[in-house]
Structures are given as C-alpha cells and as structure tokens.
Length: 221
Image 1 (cartoon, rainbow, N blue to C red):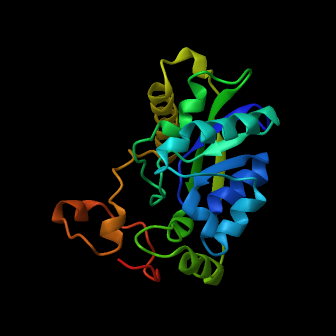
Image 2: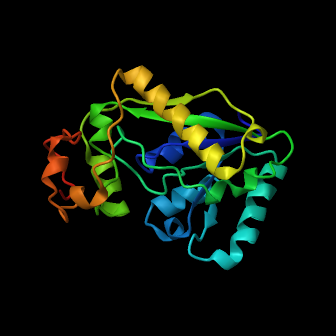
C-alpha cells in the first residue's frame, strides 16, 4: 500500500529506510537525534521523515498532529516501534506511543506490517552494539560482495478492530514474528542486547545464542 497505510516494521539498519522508501515511497517517523547523525540524518530528510522527540512529552499532541498531516497529504507512513535496531533475527517488544495516532484512526488508514529479512551477510552489517552511525556506514560501504534483503509487505489490517495502540502494536508484532518464523523455519530468539555486542556485559546464559555476525566484523563486541 503506497497510500493510506501505516507501515509497522522490524528494524535492523539505516538501510531499512532506503529499502522501504524505494519500495513504497513512504514517509518515516524517527527519533529526533537521527536528524543530526552524519549521512543517515541527511538520508532521512530525503524521505520526508517526521522527527519525534520521545523525551519531550509536552509536545506529544503536536507530534501526533504531524503524523495526521502526513496522512492528509496521502502519504504512507512507516514507524519502527522497537525503538532501536536488532540483529536481524530477533524482535524486541513494540513500543506503542507512536501508534497513538491510530486510537482514532484517520479515515481509510490501515496498518500494514512489514517484515525485513536479511541474509547472513546482510545481518553481519546490522547496526548494533555501540557502533556509531558513521562507522556503520563506512563498514557497509567497504564490505565486499553483496547481500540479499527482502521487504515483505504483509496483509494490512484495520486498527479499528483493536482496543487501543497497545493492542495494535501487539498484533503487528505477532504478524511479523509469525511471518519470519514461517519463512526461516525457526523460532525468533530474544535479542541478545546492544550491551552484549558492545562488550559491556558478559552474561554466560546469553552465550548459547549463536552469533549472526561474520568473523570479519569490525563492530565492537
């Protein structure tokens, strides 16, 4: 759906923005600090990103109105409700505040979940740990060969059939998780965490989860 859609997607990399925008022409909702990130911030502005300050609760109503204005312009809008990136094989809980606009949905708006699937080489480039945006861009551009990423647009659903934003977020997450497991033939593990990838924690219980990063990865572990 290129119009009248509220896309809800899992999140692995800044590459997600380019892929979804290229496939759908969608606008995006992103954290305000992304605006100032080298390269990535510039890319975000090209896709009509709506920058949201999650800490500024006094302006939540204004931010919701920005999203409504985007729908009024007949855009599709995409949000990454995990609030951060993961390793490409995990899902974090979906945060619901940015879905508040759907508690009284704009006319005709449907929710369309998106599943982003990277192959092994693509997952090695995930933006996780404490790697800076600039360093990740350099690492992606310097990587040898190519990788496969699939943008899977799942069946849309009507948010009016759910009791509020938390239920909408849970339904979108369920659909994305089910679609991933059906395609990959495996259960999605819990995300091992940015702290683990950055080497700030050494929880032995988490070491059972196999690394999805390549041996040549230069990101901190």
